[in-house]
Each structure stands twice: as C-alpha cells, then as structure tokens.
Length: 443
Ligand code: PMP
Image 1: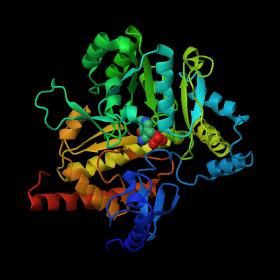
Image 2: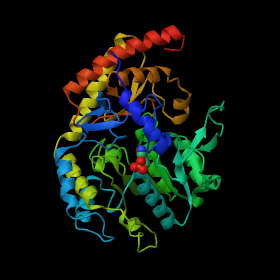
Image 3: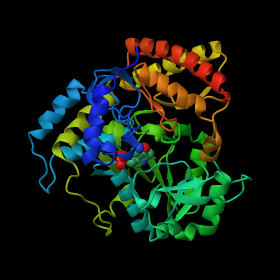
Image 4: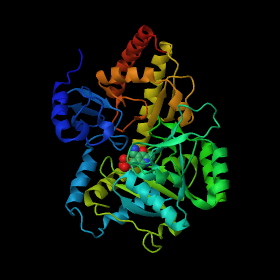
C-alpha cells in the first residue's frame, strides 16, 4: 500500500505561508506533495509526520554517525547545558575537545571551534590569506565547501566539447557577487596537471588549495590517492597552503579522516559533521605556526556561539566513542554489506553499476565505471537513480532523492535495516527497469 503523506502535505501548506518553500534550507524542499517533515529519529530510523518509518541513509547529510538520539551523547549534551550556554568567555572543556581532535587528527596541532562547516572553512581560508598575504585560492570542480560567496562557484560544462575547453563558472545561485570570482582559480578534480599549470602561473596570487578528499556533494567521487598526494607535493613546491576540508570525511572514513587514509597531512583542515553526532560544532585545525596567527598574527576569528557548552560536551562524548569503540569499523562493515547486497541484486537483474567513495559514505552509479570528476558526473544519465530513489523512499528507505549525496551509514544501522533495505531495493530496481523500459528512457 502506498504511503500516506496527508499530514506532511497539510504541514507543508501551513509552513510555506511563513517559511520560503516551507523549509529552513532550500535543499529540504522536495516538491509541494513530497516534502517530508520529521516527527522523530531513533538510531538509524526516522518517522515522518504520518508515522511512515524510514531507514535513514541521509543522516542529516552525514553528522549522525552514531545514530539519532544516541543516549550517551544526549546525556553528555544535557550535562554540558549545566555549564550554561554562552558567556563570551571560554570554558574548561574546550581544551579537552581540542586535545581529542589533535590526538585523532594530528595535523590539527592547534584548534579553534566554529558552529558549522561553512564557518570553519571561512576561518580556514581567512587564516591562509592572513598568513600568506595573498587573496586567491584554488577550488576543485564539484566540491562543496558551504554557503559563503568565495566557494559558491560551479563549472558550466553543458556546452563544453573538448575536455581542454575552459568552462564558464557560474555562482550556485543569485546574490553571489561576480567580483568574488576573480579571486577563485577553479581546477578539475583529480587533474594534477591542470593544478600544476595554475600553481606554476599564479602561485604568487594564491593563498591555498582547498580540497574535499571525497566529493561529498557530488556522489562521493573520491580523490585518487595519487591526486591527493600530488596536491600535497604541488602546494609545498609552490609555497601555497593545503586546506583539506574534512567536514564530511572527518571522524567518519577513519578516526583521523581522509588524511589518515592517504597518509597526507594538511596545513589546515576543517572538521565538523561526525564530530558531535549532529550537535552544532565544527573545528578548524592546523600547523601551530599557522594557527598562532589567529589573534597574535592579526587574523580574526570568533563568534558569539563558538564552543557552546552543550555542543562541546556532545563532541567530547562522540569523539571518545569513535576513538574507543569499534563504531567506525561497524559503519564501514555495514556499508560494505549494503554495497555487496545491492551489487548482487543489480547483477541478478542485469543492471550495470558501480560504487564510489567510501563504504561509510558511498555513491551509487548506474554505469560500469564511476565518473572521476564533476564534468563526467554532470554529463551522466541519472534517470535510473532518480526513478529508483522514489521507489526506495516510498518503501521506507530514505536515500537522497537526487544522486548528488552519497549514502551515509551510522553505527546504528543493523541487520534489520539491511534486510529491509535490500528487500525494498530489489523491488525498486525491478520496478525502475520496467518503467524505464516502458518509457523508452535509457535503463
Ligand atoms: N564543507 C563540506 C565538505 C561539506 O560537506 C559541507 C556541508 N555539506 C560544508 C563544508 C558546509 O557545512 P555546513 O553545512 O555545516 O555549513
């Protein structure tokens, strides 16, 4: 029987009168009849206003690494509230969390806290500019670094004929000043030659290269180990700073994030999502000689809500659980079992496919080979994914409705989740194949 969305839809009609699109983030609007509102989440599951139950593979775009309403993290957060909210002064727990962050991510020799990934990346870029005295920066096509003007640029690749053509770079939306574009040097992902070209010619204008180790908003396309190491070598050679944005990968793909997996140390890195199981806190960390520029070297960093008591306590507990338990192993193991199960179903039904990213945040592609950069991803056909996603959501498997976000796994995903997911997946793939065969669309 089809889900009822009567309450969700009624709520949407009320919400859209007071909230643009009825939501608090453009990305939460899925259509007038499809926008869901959450009643509650527990573990790896959530329920919408109509009490439809879902296995959650979005996890708030990644943060909820231990599952929704984790009892120990929530108890710690309540304990943190007893300290108070904000004082415009520091509290004792900041250094405790900073020490944990450094222990797990050694590149973070010193740490400053922010509230969100966006704020942390802004602070990282300002620090790089402050230290080097240069305003330019490299971003890699397909990356997402948050919602601030400097990083809201994407390549318009539709009309490109030749891979060597230079695309036009468009802002993510209106209101991003075109002037900002002059400071931004975009380079295709996984293309060390192009990066070297840009650095050779313009390094005297460039403060930093920003890299997301896995394109967490472009289907989980990973940086090849060679490219990641090349970014390290080239930035060192041209005296440009390497900022690794581990907002999504940090404390998720390994305790020490992608830097641990690749054996590469950033000059500056940003951490956020999995750090506090969903409580609002982020961190910018980096080499001591750089980080001392905050304050002492004249680089400004602050914010009324930075290092709030509740979030710090949640971060401390989450990091201890990630450090001292097998939570991340369980996350990765579930991710692999999920991919194996999906692969068996797709093989049996003759649907070409592959996976990208990391089992804890994996992208699913309906082609023999995953794209390795944004341009190829953008030109691929996502009809199969988009159609399948609607069947999965209808059946209670909450993946991202479009293919940009990878599937996020938490330590709370269990055998029951897996069984339900694969059952719905099997039916969804068959239904999708039937529909696309009927419509004449490429299957
Ligand atoms: N950097 C990366 C790599 C991200 O994935 C995100 C969020 N998806 C951000 C920065 C921005 O973080 P926030 O949404 O917390 O501002």
